[in-house]
Length: 246
Image 1 (tube, rainbow, N blue to C red):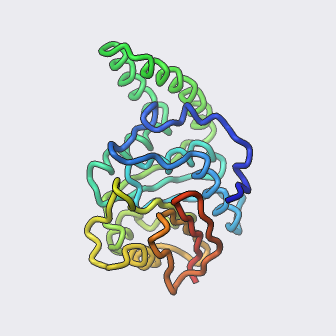
Image 2 (cartoon, rainbow, N blue to C red; image 1 turned 135 degrees about the vertical axis):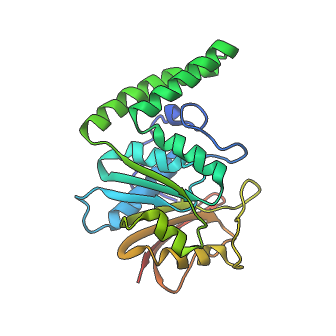
């Protein structure tokens, strides 16, 4: 796979999962550079690029990559919304998205300072240094325009639950890393094809201008008759498909 947008390597150490941003135990973090690339590819398909978008992840988990994308692309994102069927994941997602606010950063600063006091680990001290750099940036960004955020619990295949949680907010871009492998699994999905069921439910909350990016392992079929495939690419064991409702 060739990077079209995130072609220049950047140091994402401050954004590492589990340092400042919270990680979901047992779940590997989505690569930061790849998340940025996928989002920018979606953005390129938007018609009204001057207007900041609403970004939604219906399988958000801890909302790590959702938070990272919003942080890196603040100028083009005005609202981030996540949902998940797992209540514990939703609670952690609220904390991660909270780090896009000064108050969330202050809370995390107290937590890391307490860990330094208890354990004195170098890794915790490094995390605090990372937090201070991110904290300064978030303060500057929110002074220009605060980020709108919401997280709610919903089954990704339940269109009515998605509607209720989104509260009528138009969704511009869906970017989700669906469950696969040994670290995560689909929950409460009766369909033999969970991705199809997810896309079918999303039809009820998307417009014809919405863009959908789905990351999965190579074994899952990412397709639905109500969507046009815009592009597909692979990186290692992961495939990414970008779709548009028709």
